[in-house]
Image (cartoon, rainbow over all chains, first blue to last red; front, side, top):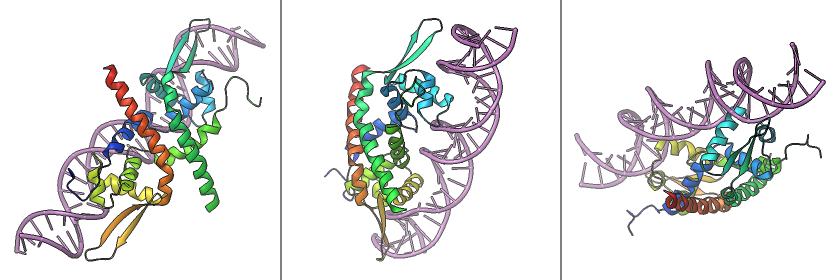
Length: 116
Length: 116
DNA sequence: TATAGCGATTTCCCAAAGGAAAGTGGGATA
DNA sequence: TATCCCACTTTCCTTTGGGAAATCGCTATA
């Protein structure tokens, strides 16, 4: 009724979806979170677990994820110094999103494969 | 065991997630799908339902979504010609992703709001 | 002493995303 | 006749994403 009539408001959905997209946007953030949640802790291990990622991109994305409190960077003061990346509890809240994307991706690949 | 020992494989999840991200990447694709699924059919209506989108971006994204068979462009040969955008059945398969993102986005906004 | 590995950082570069604003060509409306 | 609406398109520009390769300071290992 508050509408100008003629189009439907979908802002209730669009707005929170955009909030989520802003945090996990780009090609790499979710793959990195998946890798860290799987148990990879070292920079090089994470890098090797995600085909195609370069160290520069990985370093930048790790910083972003740290700022969003999805992972934490732990410095172990041994000789040599070790740096570990661990998932924060908040990262667990992304599991439903990851599962939904994984399921859809698997099905999509099957669909594409069937067609051509 | 096939690993070089030292990193864990997470490719089973990373690969399908990346397949999904490739289809729905960017700021605008999901908002547009949401708008069309909500019932907006006309170019201008879709544009007005998504704050901040420009006609250029909308036109390009609509083409992308058509190619991925998520929406269809219907030409009605009246005077004047009408063009309608309708969701394809395949768009429904995105619902779990949209719901997961919506839920996360709502919770995230609440979390941010509480903190500062 | 030399080499290798670790965890990045730096530089250079290109392509794609995306925003602002104006225009276009047809029909409808006043 | 003038103006408006619709569905875009075009132009110009800036920002962002991301790849390649080299480098760096440190430690470990041969």
